[in-house]
View (cartoon, rainbow, N blue to C red):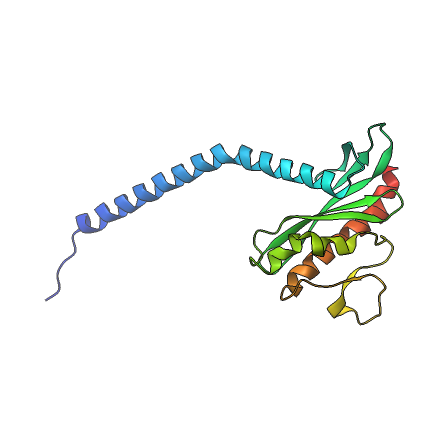
Length: 190
């Protein structure tokens, strides 16, 4: 024999579920509104610290292109180069890189200021100075390649982090993008 389901047995659980979803959504929206400003502030501070680390000769920066291109000036307000923010897809997600390029078109510093989605102990090692230092002194006129990918005999190559070739390629792609931006836009800003 089939048991007849009453409308009350359907309506009460449906309303309960709706109210639970409504409360959870409201709590998430409230949490987002409370933390959004702090998150944006922390990201801006991280980017600012990254700019000074990649272009140590700079005492101040002027934004040339929003969230991408910043011109650095020494304490006497003379231009010393550019800090360029780019990103590329890594193994686990977006890898954000700040590249410092002096006025002569030479890379003076690279900082991986966000790679939290990369594998700890592997892809996250692209943040290590031993990896980032490989880019110093390279020029913006030639592409940089990961040594494993160097089939053309390119002069500018870096060694990948062991077992993290995808993350190493992502950083290199972001640095190459910064070089492209420098070659196109920074020269216009001078």
